[in-house]
Amino acid sequence: MSKHLIAPSFLSCDFGRTNEEVKYYNQSNADWYHLDVMDGRFVPNISFGFPIISSIKKLATKPLDVHLMIVEPEKYISQFRDAGADNISIHAEASHHLHRAIYQIKETGAKAGVALNPSSPVQSIFDVLEDLDLVCLMSVNPGFGGQKFIYRTLQKIKDLKAEIISRNLDVLIEIDGGVGLENAEVILQAGADVLVAGNAVFKSTNPYQTIDQLKAIEAVRSFD
Ligand code: DX5
Ligand code: ZN
Image (cartoon, rainbow, N blue to C red; front, side, top):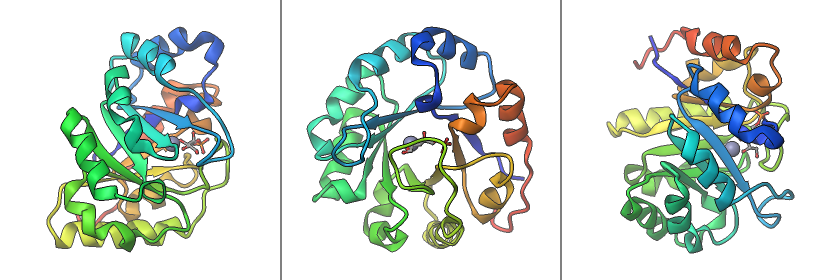
């Protein structure tokens, strides 16, 4: 049985009621809070930055999983850590010196993650895999919530999982974009450890129940 984690993506929250949203999800069985930072350059959208993360941190009882969709992420890593990030994921496509940037994250004490766009092969990060706590595979083109899951991601999850297992590494695979009750089982079966869910949770009529349903899925996995 897989013990996967659920990370609601606050991009889909009601930002006029951010405090209430955080308090609400504190009472849920969610594991992490996924926070999407967008700069209007790496992705065609702008979301939020340090002040919002700091204010969420003041109330949050779960780890903050910060996904940076920004160019030159290495310039801001320590500020995101100071704002309250527990996990910091940077995009492989956004950093010329990914190995150095990963160590910058680790030096802050945060868990280090690398995110990959749908068009980037998982093999492109195999040389830094042992330095990572987390790989965030994008299953939509980053920038917006509520998009359709790209099914090619399933093969990428399998390839990445096989590599992690063959090298006996302790790296979590997080899947971000278009994840919901209709596809969570096959995603977990392929080898995912963390499911990010924005619209599937925040637009649900009963978010607690949706989180519980996502957590209750028992995918058959030969590698657990
Ligand atoms: C997309 C973000 C995702 C997004 C997921 O760029 O990285 O975290 O909020 O939202 P859903 O689950 O609605 O696709
Ligand atoms: Zn994200």
